[in-house]
Image (cartoon, rainbow, N blue to C red):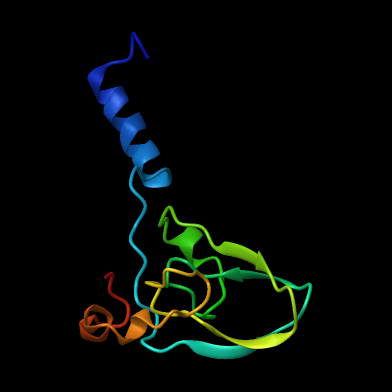
Length: 115
């Protein structure tokens, strides 16, 4: 890079910025209520962190195609049971709902917008 012109450096850095964002995007509110479902013991799941998945609460790869810089949370169910998985993406206990969706901040936010 030492001999590269300023123009060449700008082209390279803009290319890198598109593919490797410096700051990850903020998660967006997918829904304002949790999704209750049965998890199967021993099965591995990928919970959507970005909120952009069309298969909530699970990841469909939208974070990659939209270049969010976020990755899904991979977890394994320890036992077969019904749980409430967070879709507001503001929980302090991911992937499980902790009731944060009831907060004024989440309720005022529009679905699809970051908190």
